[in-house]
Image (cartoon, rainbow, N blue to C red; front, side, top):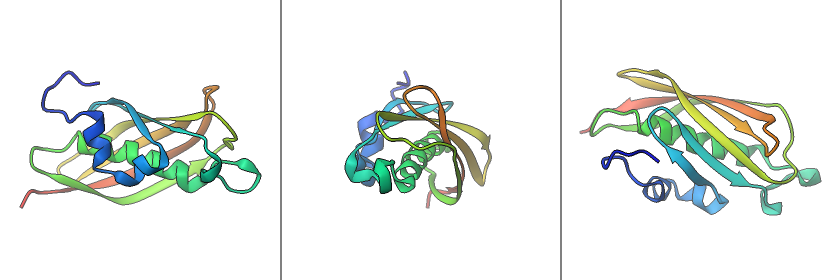
Amino acid sequence: MPDSPNVPSPEALLAAVPFAGELGISLQEAGAARVEATLPWAAGLCTLGGVLHGGALMTLADTAGAVCAFLNLPPGASTSTVESKTNFFRAVRSGVVRAEARPVHVGRSFVAVRTDLYDEDGGLVGQTTQTQAVLAAG
């Protein structure tokens, strides 16, 4: 976790995204340069054949990416997702999926974040690139 006292705790960050908590997402690391989050496989989050639903995976990626974007905002600003694109590479039938989000562009108007999703064996499950608008305080 970040050392700065100005960075919200992982619990506070997740409290801002209650849907993520409902799915079982947790934050392991949260800093401006890198956010790591996890989602355990659960039968209630699956589609046919016990495969973790793409929507659950996208929620994991969106949550990690949004936290990363938020931690790169200027003081007082907020953010909102304006675009998100996901590629899925392999199915998840058990275990825990790990998301690693990193900023690829931090500007005055937009923050772009890439989030890689990995299974327990380190295999790349999916990759999401999202753009977040920087909303000025006001």
